[in-house]
Amino acid sequence: MKKTSFWVYVILQVSTIAAFGQQATTPFSLKSCIDFALKNHLSNTIANNEILAAKEKEKEALSGYLPQINTNITFDDNLKRQVSVIPAGAFSPNEIRVQFGNQYNTNATAQLDQVIYDKSMLLGLKAAEPNNQLAALRKEQTQDNLIYNTASAYFQVLVYVEQEKITLENEKKYRELLDILKLRLDKGVIKKTEYDRTKSTLNNILSQKSIIQANKAVALNRLKNVIGMSLNEDISVLENINYEGITQLERDNSLDVNDILDYKIQSNNILLQELDVKRKQAAFMPTVSMYGRYGVMSFGNDFGKSFTNWIDFSSIGLKVNVPIFSGYRKNSQLKQSEISLLNARTNLKLSTESMNLAFQNSASLLLKAQTDLKINKENLTFAKEVFESSSVEYQKGVSMLSDLLNADYSYKEAQSNYVNSLINFLGTRLEYEKSKGNLKNYINQF
Image (tube, rainbow, N blue to C red):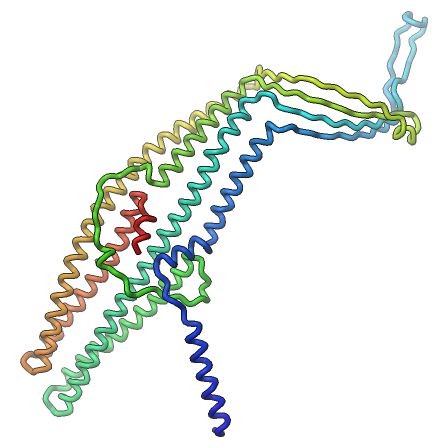
């Protein structure tokens, strides 16, 4: 390689490393991931659109009580005008046939209609506010789902982070142990089988590390998908999580269903259904409206005169519509609405029981998860002490390799039990806070 080419190569490598350093992303906290999801996930956009649609429905309901103005323009060419017959004897001994009207008629009218009283429309206006509240509650529910899914995906990444830390720690210890055994093997102090068994254990750790890193990459991609981030973006999570603070818990066995979004949404739907029943009942009541009409018309037997000889006219009036019989259609609609209301109230009772059941079950599972986590953490501490003690004794030559491997097996089992109990606790705690409608407050502590 020429000297110039060598330095060009070095400059390119340095530039690449510098560019990589600039692209390195700042680790995302759980709160940062949730903020990103609430801002960028498409489901949040859909929820915002539903709020806008609810406001447009409110305008639609209001429009029924505003003046309605319509225009109508017609042009008729009476190709064959109707003949009227005057019987004989009235004006002549013979019947007289007369054609009235003109061949061409042009009419232009404008009419204003104004509703004065329509109870069904008034109830529609009253339904606008709960309909807006329903859209807002559904947006809040969408946000809660985003928070829950993001936290669940984030916790899964943290689990693999912890597993990776443990694996790296084990790898480091076994590499150090293997170096010592290599020196002993070279001096003929130990058998090759002891070295090979330790080397095999290290290889197993390396294989496990590879699997964990692959699972971690998959979990990170899932997290990016959940928060609405492109899969091409780089993301990492904060690793210095205060698990001690997270696992501290003051349980409250009381549940107020009014704090749960599902209960609020169903209650709001019942209110809307009650208004719908009242609207169906109002369909049997009279409606009153008024109108004003103004128009011009022109006619003639010549095509040109039908657009020049204009005569105007106007009228105002009052309309009262009294429903008498609709073929049982309105009565059937009312019955359907009443049945829907009855079902909505029954479903709310069933949902309330299910909410209480979910809360009680999640509270019991959380207590068990907290207990298991505490026990497994203590066991991990004991197993680590035993392993470190066995490692020192083996290095001093006062114990056998089998004793060290047995302590190592117990230590790895304690590590696995601790990580599994941590996974279970984080997931159970998430379900518990969701079941009592306290998910946002819980997440704010991270």
